Each structure stands twice: as C-alpha cells, then as structure tokens.
Image 1: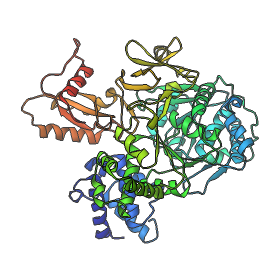
Image 2: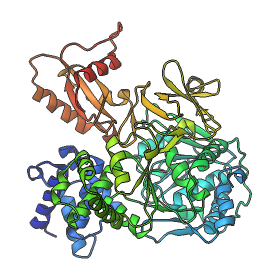
Image 3: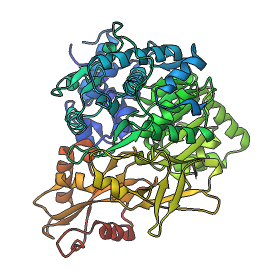
Image 4: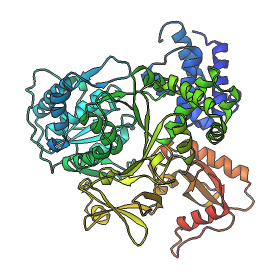
Length: 85
Length: 530
C-alpha cells in the first residue's frame, strides 16, 4: 500500500503540536525518541492524539513499535482501510 | 476483618466468602472478568499446577508480566502454594528478566503474551502462561502451606542489571502494612479502582491490589496508558479511585483540558497554558464559573470519580490547589519498598503544605540527629536478599534507615526534605543512580563529567550531566552535540535530561574522585535550571 501523504502530514502536525518542535524536518523513518527526544509520556499523548484525530483504535500490542512518523501513518492507513496489514 | 488474614492468599479466601458474586477483577476491554468466587477457585487450581511442577516450598517464581487480572491471580497462586513471587514489570527488557531470574535463582516463570518468548529463553526455568496455570487436571490446593513469617515476595528496587537489589517481604510484613493502611483508608464495597501502575512495585501491590481486594472493591486494569483511553475507562467503568505517579497526573490533566477546550467549556488558548497559569486563572474565577468547570470535568471523568492517590515522587504544589477546586480529592503519602512499603498518608487538603501526611497506625517514625527518617513497624522488610551487609546497614536495632531526610511537626505530620543517598527519583517515580548513568557519557571533549540531581519546578529531581570541557576552546554547541549523541545511545532510563557546562575545575577528593554533592550544591547556588 502506498503511504498517503495527507495522513503523514497530519501525523507530523500532531507530533509538532505535542512535542512543541518542528517535526517537518525529520525523516519519516527517524525514531521520535532519538531524534526529537520525545519522552514516554509525550509518546502516550501523541498516540492518544492520533486515535482521536483519525478516530481509530491502535492495537495494544503494536503501541511500543509506533515510534516513527512513517509507522504511525502506515498503521492509521491500514486501520482506516479496515485491516491490520 | 483483616485480623482473619494470616497469609496473603487469605485475602482471596475470605473475599470469596464475603463477596462471592461481586466482580473482583476486570481488564480494559471488558472481556476478562473474575468474581471473588472465581478468583479464589483460580488461585487454588493454579497453586495446584505450580505444585505439580515439583517445586519445593519457598522456591522462587518469576512473575514477568504487566498488571492484569492474570497478574494478581498468578501472584496469589504463587504465595498460596508456599512459593515466593519475584515480580518484574512486563515492560522490563529480556536481559533484565534474565538477570533477575539468575540473581533470585528462580525455578519457574509465569509470563504474559508479550513476555512469553523472553521468558521461555531463561535457561533451566519452566515457563508457564496464565492459560497453563488454570489447567483443570491439577488438583486444587485448598489450604496454603505458607507460614506468616515466610518470605512472600522479592521486590527489585534497583533497575540495573549490574547491581541488583531485592527486598524480601514476608506475608506478615505485607499484611501488617495492609492492616495499618486499612485502619485509616478502607475502600468500600462498590468502589472501583483503575490500576495504572506496575503491580511489581510494592506501593501498587499493597495499595492498588491487596487493599481493594481485602475490602471487596473492583479493580479495572488500564492496560495501555493512552490518556484518551484512561478517561474513557474512568467514565465508562464508574471508576472511583486512581493510584498514580505525578507524570501521569499531568498527562491526564492535559487530556481533560483538551476535551474541555474542544467542547467549548474553556477557551482554546488554555491548551497552551502551564498548569500554574491554569490554576491561578481558576482561582480568579467567580464561584458560578468554577462550578461550570467542575461539572464539565465531572462529565469527562464520570460522576463516581473522586479520589486520586499520588505516590512514587512529589507532585508539584500547584496541584494541591487545582485538584480539590475541580472536585477531585488528592491523597499524598510516603513510603519505600523496604518499609513494606507505606509509611505515611494524608489528604492533601488536611495536611500542612509540603507534608506527606501522618504515619499510619502501628508505624513508628523518628528523625535522627543527622535528619534521617527512621521507620519501625511490622511491615519493615526481612532484609535484602543475599545481602547481609546491606541489610545490617539498613536495619539498626529494629529501625529502618530510609536514606531520606525529613522532619515531624508538633501535630505529627511528616515532611520529606531531601535524600541522604545519591539516588535520583524522577517525576515518573523511577529511581536512578549517578553511577548507573555516568558510564554512558564519556567523550574526548570532556575532561570530567558527572551526573547530579537538579530540582525541577515540580519538586522532582532531574538527572543532569555536568561536564568539565577538556579545552576552553570547545564551544557550547560542540559540547551539546556530543551530549546529544551520547544521550541517544544510552538506554532510555539512563538518559540525562540536560547538560551543563561547568565553569572551572570540578571539586574532587584527594583521590581524584569528583565530589558530586559539593558540585550539586554549587550548581544549586548558581540557580541552574532543570
């Protein structure tokens, strides 16, 4: 599945708002913790923001892996299309 | 009622008699639910399965999973079978699980779905899942062989693999602490507690698991800590009480703030405000306006919610102001694993500012000439596992040396003012030591470096790296770049929050060792911000 640029842009915007940093400069495969210094609580806020913004429920066992813009965007896209992979 | 408890599994046994059909445990999805009657049946069956493994009394069993109905069922089964539970968080990395298993010489391991692979790779240890624990062909164990003075649990207090430290607590220790707590704080039947902390920590084990079960309350396990889901659970499951740590309180508050701004209850600009600004804005409001906000918060968290208990670290004073204002009762307290663990509790509204409440009934607290808080009670640990010297240093004439400094006022309120030890307790309640962090920050650009706690605005310590540059020509930007690279490579819990360039030479001992305390004091004098 090709990654939707719209979803990716919206994920970046959410991250920028919560982490209060310019997320547009980071590559989609860069680790948010390493690159932006996002701590675990901001991580929770980001994922909560993603669930609310896209009206999806992220799978519990997947949460720890959702650490890059790309992975989050891909997962949202899959959930919106009614599947996990 | 607590007088009829002799060993920990008596909590499940007496619960089945008194609250048989009431719900004891449920998960966040609502798919896994156990009544008190079912919990006791499971405990007896699972104890039978553990016995059938051929374990000897007092053998140790690693409990490697996150909080869930399965966790507490497994815990009570282990202790009911006369074995010793060695709980570690399900989030702990596999190498830490292996280190804990090796140090405690465990004979078996109970794992959840996410830890099963790691658990099964611990050599020479039988690994069971909760499903295997309720295999119906084992004969149930109706009567425990555990004795009240036997060790029930080993709680690891140091998270590192290099210097493990495990506190041995007996059935007597934990039940004594439970009795003390329940004399002043008894959950009522029909109460529901949202469990958000790892039950491998003694505070959550006693106050968040054993106390509600001894009182017939319902425990709902949050699973993930996404704030939107927590708020959903609070409302949807009629939660009355949450035990938490300060950092989670802030995340929850931000979530509620988001809902209030989205619903138009308060201006959207408030989303960017600090908690201090919000609290002072709330104070300035007219009573009807305050009432409107209180009702909106109530709509968010549900009509039943009333009580927030914060442990593990200090909550900033601003919360003491804000939470009661929006209709949430705040409870504070003080404890440490070695004390079994709870020492003092208090309702924030009834405590003098900065106090952690009064010592619980049955717990003696005094402050020695050096200002150190000493605790004596039946809850105080048996000792550190395999560490006679450490135990002797911590326990003196029946008094536990807490390593914390403090004072008692005339009305018996306890104040914790600092730490004698060099441990740094962060806002998430985690303890880290400078010795653990420093090895990750060596660089050719630093002539010396060390980690000191710097007190943040919320009253919690932030581990801060202080560097002495190798050359005065090195720019701040170069030092910062080196720091960020080292920080990224360090394990998450051992990451220094920020770096400070030290002007001049480090204060050192005659042997060249950096004098951390002197350094921290000089930074504090200069007002270095965290």
